[in-house]
Image (cartoon, rainbow, N blue to C red; front, top):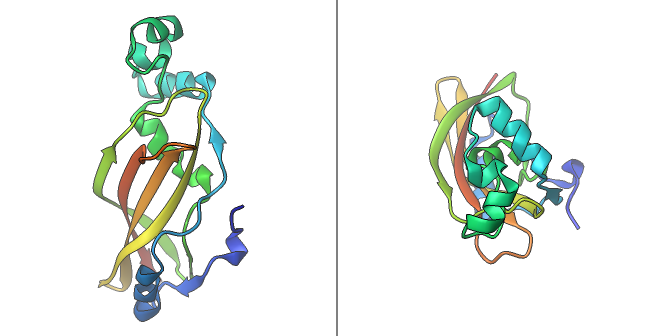
Amino acid sequence: MTETESDRPTVRFDDLAGLEAQMDAGFGPWGPELAITQEMVDAFAELSGDYQWIHVDVERARNESPFGGPIAHGFLTLILFPRLDAQAFKVEGHGSAVNYGAERLRFISPVPVGSSIRGRSRLLRAEAKGSGILVTTELEVRVVGAEKPAMLYGMQALYVP
């Protein structure tokens, strides 16, 4: 069972002490499961231009891939994170939140087509940056039932008034 957005702790973007307190909370709850379909993988291949056979050639992937079938692109896994509804806390009171970049990104294990994934997050750091607050969050995506993550991502967002 996952928490709804209203159940998550809410912290004002300019409350640095309140944000820092969230670091002690560790990872938030797992978000809902999302099924990974071949249609999603094919649509991502079309948008990205990445038609590597291990993703889009189902028969070849079944016969030649060490994974026994097609796997999702790593970057598809990354861009699906917002759909996993897995933020550990909600930031409010800001005028905008800007994607500031990535601290690190690792694709640790494959995401087989036909599997389901889920995500969770935790606050790593919050620091004053100009008139805003730079928040670094670690995002984890895992195939349901897997022991290790499929992806870890150190996301940075700048919250400004």
